[in-house]
Structure formats: C-alpha cells, structure tokens
Length: 272
Image (cartoon, rainbow, N blue to C red; front, side, top):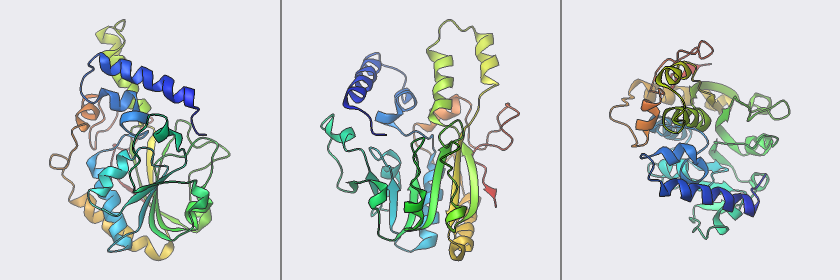
C-alpha cells in the first residue's frame, strides 16, 4: 500500500537525523533503503546479469522496472541500457519532498501496463499485493527479487510458472534487513560485547532470492546469455563503492554463510 504522508515525513526526519550524526559511508543505504538504496541488496554483477539477459531478448530491449521507487537500481541499468524506464504507483514519494521525478519514470499502477515489453524487472512487491498476471501478459522475460522472510505470503506467491513462464535460474543475495541487522550489531548496539557480536555474525542469513523467468521460446537464449556473463564475472573489476559494506558485513561475492540453513554461496547462480 502507498505510504501515508505523515509516515513519509516521519521516516524522512529520522533519516535526516541519522545523517546529521555523520555515519560511516554507505550505512544510510542499508538503514534507510527507501531514501538511499533499495529493499534488496545488490552488486554490480546483478546489474550486469540483468542487462545481458535483456540483450538476449532483443538487441535494443524494451526494459521496464516495475515499482521502481526513486530508481536506484534502474539508474544503474540505464548506464548500460539508456532507454530503460520505470513505473511507480505511489506519486507521493516524489511530491511529499518536492523531489523532481525523472522523465523515464511514469506514475501509474502496474495494472495499467498494457504494452509489450522484452523484460520486466520486479524488485519489490508489497506483501498482500499480486500483480503478476498483469506483468506476465506483457513481458517475454521477468526478473523478480523477493524476500523469503515474508514478502511473498500464502496469498501472494512470487512464481510465474502458472502464467506460461519457465524458471531459467536463480541466486541468493541478502535483503536490506539482513545487512541492516549486521550493521546494527556491529556499530549501533554498544551493549554487545565482541563475543556476542561474533556469535550473532555466525547466524547471519541472506533472505533475498532473484528468479529469472522466460517464455519457453526464449529460455535457451536467456540461459546462454546468463551463463556467458557468469563465466566472465570478475568482482574485483566490477564493483560499486557501496559493495564494501556488504563485504564488511560478511556478505561477500560467492561467500558461503556459516548458517546451515543457507546451503548455497551467495550470488552463485543455480540452474533450472
């Protein structure tokens, strides 16, 4: 559901108070993701994978980011796909703070999306909402991220097989809540001693999953493009500055968590 104006202003006041304390670089991104980041933690490799998948659909792909917010992830994609655009349902996030809306973001509900698109990116779907059928009828390929900690409940699954898509691949990354928890334990909970912090670090989790879906006729080309991209990935060469926080918090590229519930290394692609 769209935020109420008083909720937006209250959150913004807390955000400004946090910045006034001169926090370490990039911490605000994971403590106030609404204003500075996204609800899913990502690296440049995620952007590169997304772009290569889009190019597998079309040489000049029609790419739309659904529920893009202020466009944090979209802006990274646009550096490589300049025609990429986003749609955002909640106009108040711009008007409440007199933030200029980029012309590549349209204010409209997902239900009004009617044109055919090569790839739809769905980075966040509010709990209780389900607009998959509107996305599915327009897109040839869907990349969706969801928080297994509760974003998709019993009445709101995140899968697209029932709409004629096949899942090509998936990988795991932390959610902003996972990173937030680590930052809070390390920097903002002075009552925790070093032993307790180390104990909690061993329990860290990574709740966010990225799923790649494609229509049957596009599955092989999408899989081939993603495999080629993964084979040439070099995280030392392809990084954003804020990735340092992920490394520091124990969410390294291809790192295996000590938590036995997290079986596969983060960012390692699993094939279907």
